[in-house]
Length: 397
Image (cartoon, rainbow, N blue to C red; front, side, top):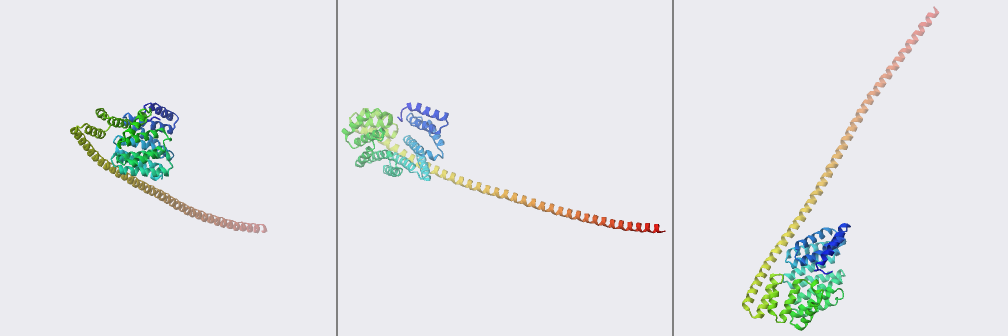
């Protein structure tokens, strides 16, 4: 896949459309993931953010998609770093760390440390960046993801060049080259890193050789971002003494910091020290503003994390309150049911007592009635005997 080719938008749209039609969230995720590198390269950052937001929603709580989620979020964080949105990148990386930690995922820990290394590199903390990249290598080995090792070696090599430790840069570049057969992109990145190393160390013949390889590689403009290619072109023009052409190309660099840095060096080579001073002053001012921005970002991150902690605390408190409410409700319902049963039993007992009383009265009444009948029968029997005696007496007379 050619990450920066606008042709990928048609493929992305097709994948997403089929995903919607078949209700297949995996195809929708793939379509969105293929889309946002192109959105980055064309400066459509809002659409890139929207694509990533939808991916996060589709993969929320899906542990079976972590092997997709972590690399996609890593790529997104890279774009956040490149566009200067460091605070957002830090928060995303720490969110990845949290998920990876809770799930004990070396894959997630590898990608989150890699992003934190890129962030430190952007802040000119190259030693710290190497530390994070080495941690990422540790988790990479733990996850048995050998295919990701060369990218980490390349990143470390580039940091070593910035620290002018060319021997270590050479060592890590050689380690990365052992994996060139994994993919053509790794081979391409190794060539870019070699070119950077040779230019920085003053080995111009070797630099020109690798620059020529890149220039005649059809995949180079498709898989390496425009800013990196412009910086490589400026290095070539400077190495050939074409300083005015290099100065003109410097205006095409994406960030003020890169422009000031290149122009300062070029003006110094031209002998225009007044303009070189102007550019270095602007560069220092830019670095100061970046330093202030970094401090503000750190405060923003701290504030965001405090807010998140407060939200988690509030959520726990609400959960506890809900549990208490449920318990109280259950006890109340139980109490109502218990008292209802007691009332019903009391009423039943009262009814039984009433029935007993009524039965006793009816029994007494029946007994009195029986006694009355027996008395009446006895009285009738006496009267019959009297009548019989009278009859007998009358017959004798």
